[in-house]
Image (cartoon, rainbow over all chains, first blue to last red; front, side, top):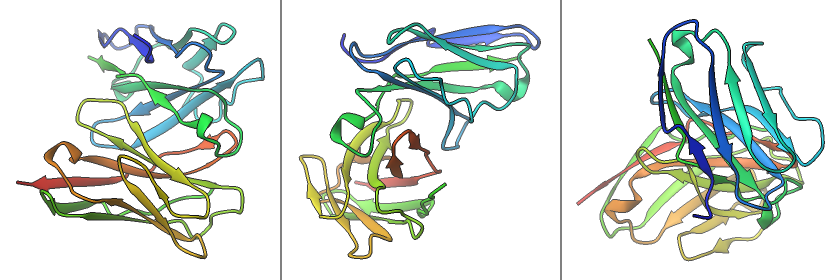
Length: 118
Length: 108
């Protein structure tokens, strides 16, 4: 498929364990975003990658959260020492670019990874 | 950060038009207005966007106030499949932050 792919779709882990969430953006999309969505809430911005520029990490809630992106392809979001409050759906989106409001800034979202921390 | 304000929820009858309002009084001249919607158990999907002029596409229409401090997403004939959370977002460079959105319920 040509859409944004996220894996795993569901992840259950124990408190204190580390987890890695993966996002495969649409080919050719230079911008990649991670969001967190708690049950019944809106989307919370976490981190943004644009090409080879330094990522915007201003939304990461603590130093337990980190993300990497290899070039303009796959990204992984890592949560260390998970807490129950980390339980949420983690959404990834990609876009062609992120300058102004041009049509190419439209974000395409994956289906998300539902993380449950017991 | 520029912010948007939307009603928490709205109801509509099937096959009737729906007008979803959004206030963005602190909008800057370079902010585009984007709308996304999120169906149950799915990631958000793009609906429409605009800068100053009203916009139409196959999904909806976007009416933007002359002073740009508010906008309205218009679904011309709501269907049951339009039941979703609708997000109004101001987009400028790399800043695109989602609020809580409006949960639209469509009654048969």
